[in-house]
Amino acid sequence: MSKYSDKYLGRRSIQFLFVIIVVLMGIQFFDFVQSVSESNLTLSTRPAGVEAFLPISALVALKAWLTTGVFDRIHPAGLVIFLAAMSVSFLWKRAFCSWICPLGTLSEGLALLGQKIFKRNFVPPRWLDYGLRSLKYLILGFFIFFIVVIMDGGSAYAFLQTPYNMVADVKMLEFFINMTWIGFTVVTGLILLSVLIENFWCRYLCPYGALLGLFGIISPWKIRRESHTCISCARCSSACPNHINVDKMQKVWSPECTGCLNCVKECPVSNTLKFGLLNPSFSLTPKKLALCVIGLWFGIIGIAKLTGHWETSISPEMYRMLIPMMDQFSHF
Ligand code: SF4
Ligand code: SF4
Image (cartoon, rainbow, N blue to C red; front, top):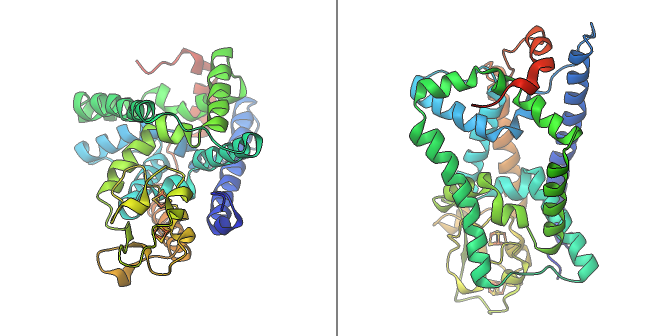
């Protein structure tokens, strides 16, 4: 059975929903930037959710919040989304990566394309795979060192107020719209590698996934295998997009586990593979997990909106002033 068969339609539907949301937000944000730049009297609404693409700013905002007690007013939605992703992953492994993240969905789609073209995805030898997997922890370590260790609370707060951080979302849009040759080469290279090697970006390079994986290690919900009913068919391991040898484990601790539940869906013996707590009666089927992930995600965002922790405090006038000058802003 292919890892990409119709069995996984439920998860696919949720991934598709989030891709649609992100695409609509992108179009709306483009409209907003256009209307600000052209000094239109009728301003388009800025979708606060675009701040999901500013994880470094969110990490700085978390540091500032924990040390000064001030919740970021510049990109509050970015911090809320960061907290929501950490909460989902703390409970259900890296479920954010396999159910919500549009880059995870894109990676899966590109791997599917690779399977269609080459009839398989290529797997690097084990020594190379280990070496490459450490890259995302090195990138994460770099950011943790500078933001958590070196930067003090006052500097973190000050960074959030810089013009560079204020227009970081517009700079991100600019990167994709007016891509340089270097940017184009890097993005094209990553796409090609993702066609050849399953989850190339997520498995080897994404520091966000690395951080969520560390949270996932202590997640109370884990894949658990009943060895006395297991028939050792290894279908669970073949279905795992992260190459985890589920059939050899009692419990999956790996930070690579994204809680996709492909393995649970593939297991032919009922009640042998579960995504559960220590007490087996609290296990989650893929449908229940989908409801939990969606419920927690939109619950946190709903609370943030109701309590005024979602919309930026940057006024349209401020955007009008900053956007024409944004090429002069650097993060130093
Ligand atoms: S172990 Fe199971 S839930 Fe975890 S990534 Fe592999 S297939 Fe998905
Ligand atoms: S798919 Fe189920 S029965 Fe087969 S090896 Fe995995 S846990 Fe055991």
